[in-house]
Length: 258
Ligand code: PGA
Image 1 (cartoon, rainbow, N blue to C red):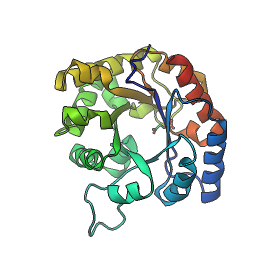
Image 2: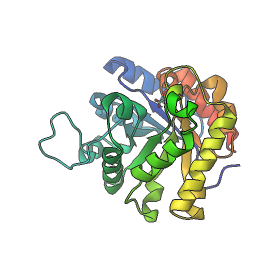
Image 3: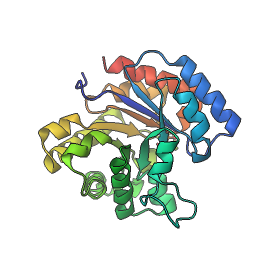
């Protein structure tokens, strides 16, 4: 049974997908199929659709999120988007350190930390994504990678700010590949992450931290993953692009955590 302060969180990361009309069709279908409020639901559309999707989210309990942000408030940063701009669009949470930003775009731990702190400082929730590559897993480095990414990502974040943090454990080898960590493997990583947060802050902080799993989560495996005691929800890529699948995952979260 989840802690009362660990409301399950399910986020749909649309990545660089959808046209404007597909995005509207998708959000309308998710909105009309949503039952109950046991799960906190957020969507992360492409930046250019934030306003449009945000105006629809405003009519429902779906939270609007952004896939990235820049850490400076304004200035000569061509192509970048500040947290102030995101808030103007109704955004309440931001993904930081997503594996595609780390491994495809080349973001460093330092940049992820700056973005995480900027998001929290702006009053947004930072969904800090961490996880090991296949090579790191095969070398037995899963826990060490999670530890160093979390320590670096949360450097300078105070205990009183942790309510604005969700940690997403997303093994890189499981993202978009159809391969999923087994519930036991994911639970093991989540337990260690929770213990790490407790060690970095205190026991209460560890117990209160929401730690969600990402990496090929779909209707067929979401229930067993979210049934694990330390898995507090999911960050969904591919399956969030189909309303029916995303809604089934949200339902699985609601069923597992009551
Ligand atoms: P996936 O993506 O569900 O397509 O594996 C997850 C993510 O990148 O957050």
